[in-house]
Amino acid sequence: MKLTEAEWAVMEILWRGERFSLSETVAALRPVKGWNKNTVFTYLTRMEHKGLVAIDRSHAKPYAAAITREDCAREERDDLLSRVYGGAAGDLIAAFLKESAISKDEVERLRKMLDDMEV
Image (tube, rainbow, N blue to C red):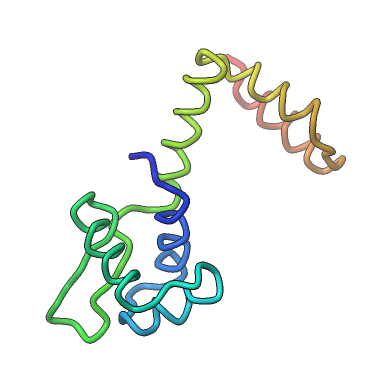
C-alpha cells in the first residue's frame, strides 16, 4: 500500500512505540504537521480502514501501527524500482551511487552484500 506524505508522518509516530492515546499522537504530530485533535482523529480513522492503523477502543491507548515500517518501505522500494527503473535493481543502485556520497564503510558493506548474493 502506497502511503501519502501525511500517512507517513502518522506512521512514523506510531512506529516509535506500542500504543498511543489520541492526545499523545496529537502532541507528537503538532510540531511536525500543525494538526489539531480532529485532524489527527480523522487520519487515524481513515488509516484504520486502509489497514495501516489498529484501533482498540477498549484500551486507554487505542492507536497502534497495523503494518511495519519495513513492509511499507519494501512496498515503496518495489514501486520505485518498477515504475522508474523498469525493475532493474542495478540501475537504481547505480543512480544512487552516482548522486550520493558514500563512506568507505558503506562501500565495504555493499561489496559484502554483493559477494554474499553470488550464486
